[in-house]
Image 1 (cartoon, helix red, strand yellow):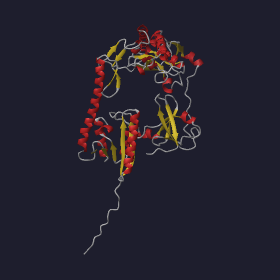
Image 2 (spheres, rainbow, N blue to C red):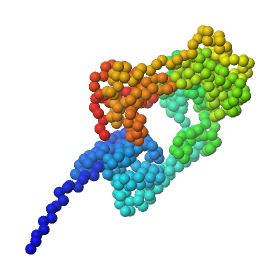
Image 3 (cartoon, rainbow, N blue to C red):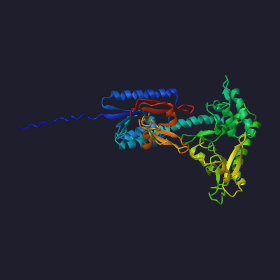
Image 4 (cartoon, rainbow, N blue to C red):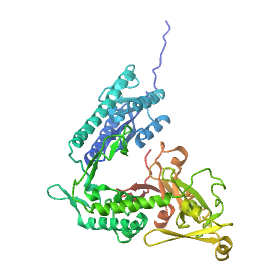
Length: 498
């Protein structure tokens, strides 16, 4: 009798590399706590399961499930493509995505990579036979539920609009506050500046001149930032300051974006809705002045084929401040044309303040034969006067401005260049010279080579790094933007985990 000995398979089955995906759609404190709890829960569950190997938790904070470009989701899909993941755990279909096409496209791509997604609430594994059918049905329900909720919320506002019940957000407007009764009244500490803005506008001051005046006097916007031309424009054109109110001035479109209502949906105009800060007469004078400014900028502009016949001064006009040519710039939805300094465009305002001359003004003034160097002299009110100087006269007193040379990328010029890394993915930071501002910044090489799906990327000005003093060992740098849009940088010696 022959006895056969069959050896057992001593090779142990490989553990599944398991990760989790979490998402919350708003930045409320309770939502942030919910996200932290979800991350902690999945980390505990995965690490406690003997057949699982922990592959991380990916998350997105304050991002709608209708959006496909979510950093956490994109990073997870990229890691799955690299073979780092076998199974993804997530709470439900709606947490993964609220758009049916996004759910199906992502799960099918993962399925091709033999990566499964397990939806806990629905008890669906996409690698199972019935997973595809059930997922299609449930994803459609999740999208329909979200759209129904959105439609319901819109209907509530619609009924209020039709009944003439104001839905106001004046607390977000400079110059207004609520009293103890919940009524919107003028906040005199800000209202005095609102009146000043309207008086200046009615008197012919440009928004740029008003902006400078406010910033020089230390006046801040509602968000605590400096004023810009656009914020001044919006304030002057806003009907709330004469006591009126437009309901449904903006609406959420099918792509879930808040857009200006330009007649796509109904709107309601309410007169004498709340306390006015400026009189209707002053408000109208400011509108007339702004409109006259627009007419002045548009008057005489010719927007045609870019030829010497249509523009006899093309290639013959230069900035008197730096000597660089003026280039043609069409703006305002193709309705206006001006000529700006190419030196400013290429190297930034630190290189040259530049000029901007409306095409209509240049066209009226042009009667020259040779090259001309143009300068502008703004008045106190912000209106501009232009001067024209012949090339021979300009060159006797000036030379064409040349940008400062950037040091070569050597350890002598940048002694820290091999010691700085991205705090998000650990990749080295590499030098990049901004062609417009001519300044050096350091950017994540991982994001540069592999895209944002790999890493959102750290970008930091060279001036910030120099301000930290001598760097003796490797550091990993991150940037965080605060609520006012200010960029803050931090670093650590600890390398980020994959």
